[in-house]
Length: 407
Image 1 (cartoon, helix red, strand yellow):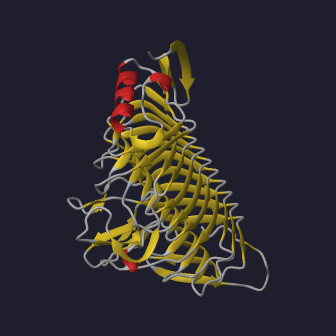
Image 2 (cartoon, rainbow, N blue to C red; image 1 turned 90 degrees about the vertical axis):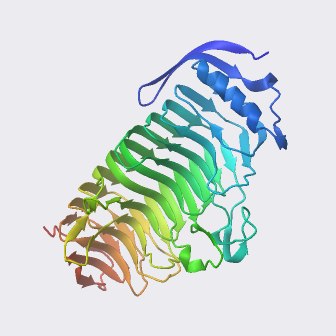
Image 3 (cartoon, helix red, strand yellow; image 1 turned 45 degrees about the vertical axis):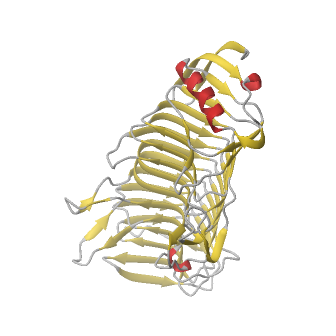
């Protein structure tokens, strides 16, 4: 029998779990890591979801061969639990959830064996293909559809092409997403990937070693493995990104892009009302293919017709520490902050040691306001561009530049 006791608990983002606390000590799920535990864990979660239960899984190692489905009004605790995937198909996730609300995933170690391959190896999914870059295309947690009141907290995720994905079809449907105090290490394409979210709180996560995405076909080359972001974002509004520690990535530490609507020839959902502050970002290095490095990257550009393309409407970037000491140059330029938003305030950031030939402390559009940043030992401390043309303020002998408002 399963021992249960009554328990009610309030969770951040106004989540309330009232139900039974289930301890999985006598459910016979193998926790030795010797046999497949997928079906047993799925039955446990199915039962907990029906009863609006807060579920605690017994510590141990669990082999997972297929995705485990998660449902609404469920908190799953995994302290001391190690989930080890053994997938046979690409793009498979350990945890999946669609159209869920009031869901919390807490305390798991989710461990895959991915690594960076700089030469072609036989695909683990299809022996007729080769792979390069990251060695798998697995995902630790993938949530989609219409989501609300989601907490991902205090998990350790390593060895996946993507750590956490939250996405939908392009309309802004996801709201109240908290991602906090997690650690991601040895990841391929992105540690955290958020798309079309209203009210995201991404706080105090540790993200290390984002090595480049998986490329699988008959003749892949390493330059195709060019995407490697700590936090990748598009269609994000009313959200904060605070206190994250991000180090060693081949594209961007924190990246804001925007989906494209081909029917209207415009940005699908621009990012808006964003705060990025008190993050520590280091080692933007080894860019590949067509992609440049940036500590904080807010994309905006001029298209072939001369039209200004803005993917972020409003953003504040302040009190971040961005340092590139010891970084190795890649194929392209390196930036502490680059920003093409329509309205941006950049202040009180400390940006140092972007010393590559094309190393910039701050490179931004003429729409940005820039004040009281400390820019030290960058090849080009500050560059402002208007419709694609840079006006550069080159490196000076003085060790510190406090930049004034440019607009």
